Length: 128
Image (cartoon, rainbow, N blue to C red; front, side, top):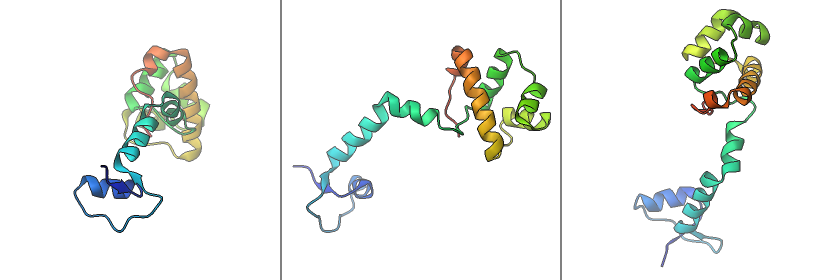
C-alpha cells in the first residue's frame, strides 16, 4: 500500500524518510505525484512551451552560432535591438544577460534565426 501525500512538499518529505503530518481526505499517493510529474516532463508540448516563453534565451554559444549562421555581424544584431555592439559581445560570451526590454527583442530575433537554422538551434534552446 502506498503512503498518501498532500502535495509535492509532502512527497519530498516522504522520499527523505521524514514523517508526514496527519493526512486529509484529498490526499494523493506518492506514486500519483511522481506519475503527474513524469507526465508534465514527458509531454512534448509542455517542453516546447517552456522553450518558447517570450524571454527564453538559448545558451550563449548557440546565440553566437545562430547569428553566424544567419551571416549577421554583432553590430547588425546590436542595431536591430537598439544596443551597443559590446552588449551583444557580452551576451554571446555569457558575461551578461540582456535586461527585460532588450531580452524580449533579442529572444524574438533568436527564435526567428532558430526557425531559419534549426540544425544550429538543436544545440539547445532553453537557458533563461
